[in-house]
Image (tube, rainbow, N blue to C red; front, side, top):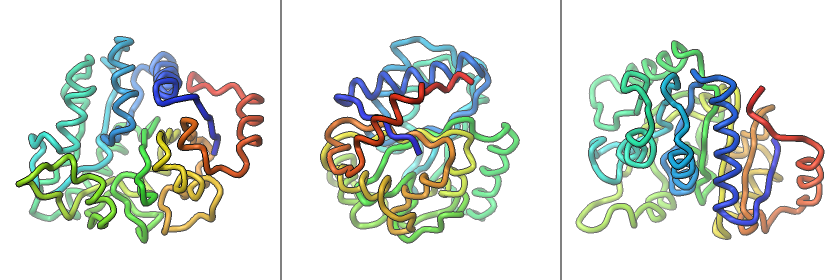
Length: 257
């Protein structure tokens, strides 16, 4: 796991966009996994601003709420469409988003999603945010660290955090469907973005604590090509910051190879 610390969220978004731009230049047909949380939205805005060529790229949504449709303004699908998919030249047939409204044979639906990822050649890059309780996707504390795409119950902490996206009389969904931690770890590269002081404690546990299902994001320690991009506030709890800065200085980070 490589850790890079930028001055603020804007600088972090630019660094993340540089890496995506390098990947698309080296591999125009790259397969990207997209998170719909608040932090990656700055990255997507930067990608749109740069007018990158997504014509040959394929994207897969990381997760989705159940109990609402993909047209709901707070759905992950709608967020990804508004902030990236409909603003770049992605071909519709190359866009794969999880459908939280599926009711019949959900295990078969999840298996088909995994099969679609495999048929596309696997994920070249999975983009992630970090939940305040250490979740990635909707893989909540206590999940399987080897799990694949699956239905999930949302924790109380996640529902409280997401409540502002569902103003009354809307209710925050209690369930979701998500790529599993095993799906994420199978990506050739993983890039996690975290900003703000509210994430500092969990960032430290993710990066410097044990690998544990209590902090699902800690599984990224096991990925040889995981990159964690932080702003100063999110990095505030790291004990070995000087070591990360030394490693960053010694290695030129590039997704172009």
